[in-house]
Image: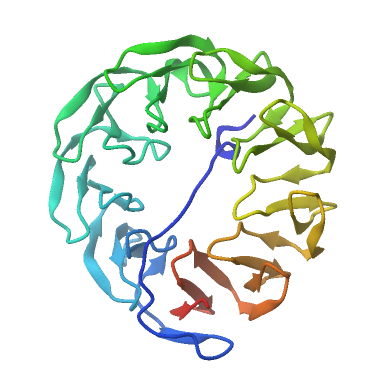
Length: 345
């Protein structure tokens, strides 16, 4: 399974300063802003990038007013998490706060976007090995791992091996002790007490003792969310509960975890949302779909994007060329070369 397929993402905290008064309201009008938004709003800020005349790209951050608030001067910027944003400058990685002040000096060689700041620690690499640093820049876990993901539920996946797809994975605690041995070909972080694991091209789930609580009998799967996990068998996807019981049959081409009571599912290249009884709440008519955030989801028909609510009602028309939304009441939208920010009801 390609590493890029194995990903997962979430939420922003922004206080809505103006009321939604119609189909949509432009909080920051569409215009050529000199940068391209590269994600939604996290801790009130969005990563943005621009290109110089020689094609060099630079990154910074913008707020929900559409203004650049942290200069576009970095080699790369990443989403904020708990007030910490990892950035790269002059080839080295460090971290800043939401005011642009340096929290962690630029002295690290690498950063894995699967290891953002979480539970007080962030993963960097130095001298070809990964370790963990706190928000004050103090190394808390030495640089001794070939790969590492974020801490979730007090444990972090770590690996030894030549590359991410050819490594043995286990888990460490916050003292850096290996508490689940290097056993698996790939793992996800813990979620709701279980971690997804792969071995010998089969997948299942373990608990925090390392016990296989759901046998490794599936072709693929994703993390548990709201008590259910999507798993694939013989090319089709269904959902299991934490006892390993199949609660929604294997009838989907692909499926994503439940959020806010709904899961995105795919059949015949079209997407719908289902509830936990398997009822379709949106018809299979969209060619692209995101998960629910704050009761709304982004959908696409053809090349145009808009928003629906839980019932499938289109609350913002599908008129945009691109949308970046992670909840919190604001979304970047694009028409042609122009970007603006709209409020989402």
